Image: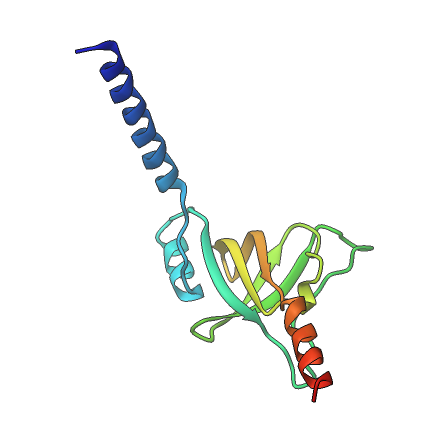
Amino acid sequence: MKKTHIIGIAVIAIAIAIIITTAGDASSYVSFKEARELAQEGNTTPVHVVGRLKKDANNHIVGMQYDPRIDPNYFTFTLVDTNRVEQQVVYYNNKPQDFERSEQVVIIGKMQQDKFVADKILLKCPSKYVENEIKTESAGL
């Protein structure tokens, strides 16, 4: 075999090893029920949960607590997953900017006793262009 063939095979083997390693670290999207079951089984791998913020009739977020004067690294709120299961979420960091405006929330973390402890919070905020398009269309009428 030529040296170039050996180098090519080595590069492919390294690439496969990297893919396998990162695939093992990847977390999956689950519901709160599944996250609870995984935690009870002793699984400590972080999982993704998708949901919406629980809001009252006046569109105010229910169960949100954050006071940076008392503890800037403690933020808690109630999230409703895609199966409509409500769960208290605790995030040991400061509240993300524009959290109140988010349409959908993805939390990454794991269940610990009766609460979900988030390591990361990803927000899907409403597009700023949708409102401008509506104003433009209504102005032309």
